[in-house]
Length: 528
Image 1 (cartoon, rainbow, N blue to C red):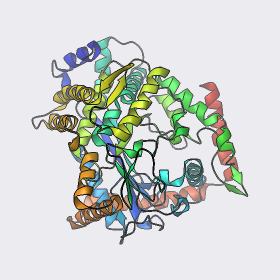
Image 2 (image 1 turned 120 degrees about the horizontal axis):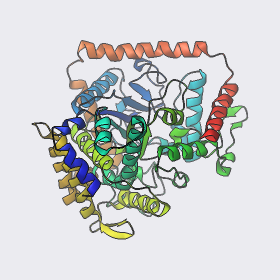
Image 3 (image 1 turned 45 degrees about the vertical axis):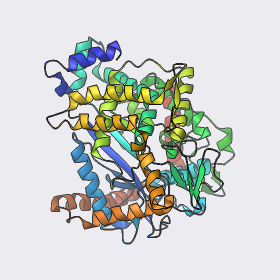
Image 4 (image 1 turned 90 degrees about the horizontal axis):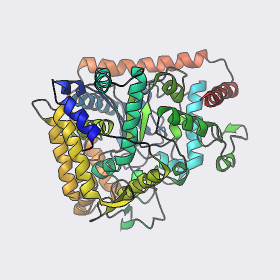
């Protein structure tokens, strides 16, 4: 335990200060593909009964028209988050006909890139921009990669925690600047230690051959339909998934909020020869929003992001620059095929304790040498994290994964004790992950492979079976209480009205709208 962390934990353990940690806001964004009863990606439009994907606050789409995304409000308890997530699944299944929600991160059976329909958001300028951005992602990285699903965990510490900690440490300056610097410290440590999330919660050690027809040197053949990594934890977060070579060359610093914003802004305004070859507008149709290194901020596939809710029309970097960090978004979580909603309360509780541990610990700046180690660690754990005796580089020295993982889990355990109430649910969540560190076969990636071998099923067949079982579970539940039904039904109906209003109010040609958008980005990048 480092001295800074020691000091902060000692302070929190006195005079009921631990109460300052409890009640931090938590939210989930869960992605899931709509598939046919036989497991093919849906070619149907986003169901109108679910409202507008452009304006519905709870039910939208990600890259594909078939890739649903469920967004919970931010709640102080994991129980409330889980219940809302369950309610949304039940609401959607009541309107989904014969389709099934795919319960795994790695996609179902697909033939070609063009078989994956890009999400559509209507005829407004913002709707067209969102669709063209996705079209650009397809040209840049391929549509198959964009069909991978994940779970994002959003978290912010209680507002009363910050002024109390600032006063305890005698830190000068504005409270918002102090909060932002502390959240950026959390981001840096999550980059350092985020490999633990892949090890503990990775649930994608196998994939359908239709996703990667020619295989890979790191993969083995399980059967005619399945590639797998013998010791893999999260192929989704490996070089086969989001961590491609183009993204790997982006250098976005987390050493301060100012550097983070400046580096993202520069990537959005810096031309890329590789993407210039695609073209922006070809034969009258936009292929991408720009030919720069990033089209917009969201294209940066970081495992963790500092976030601030932006006003309508406000860029994410602009919101961060003007108002500071509001919460942290952890993006490294696979969809857990063993849970109907893709995540459970135990995972959320462990993540909350782990994030606080990362935020309270010493967090020096990350230099180029350490960043190289971070990238190497993530790749190693994603593809072979359960390999016996696996060692990771830690400040230039080899360190056993198991020993380091147990050290980090123990650190999260010290925080969990402060978060516990009489039920000790947080300590129980940490104990479960401590057991997974000691015995890799308890990790979800190992359990998934074991279940596939035990049943003699391919990955697509096993994932479809589990997805159908989850559908049957949600459809077996009692009807939603009237107040919950009305909340989701009203939001679906009102979202359609909001989309119509946006489209009716648009009187600016799209080309001018896009130029104004990027002119603003360029001027802010120069000022930054």
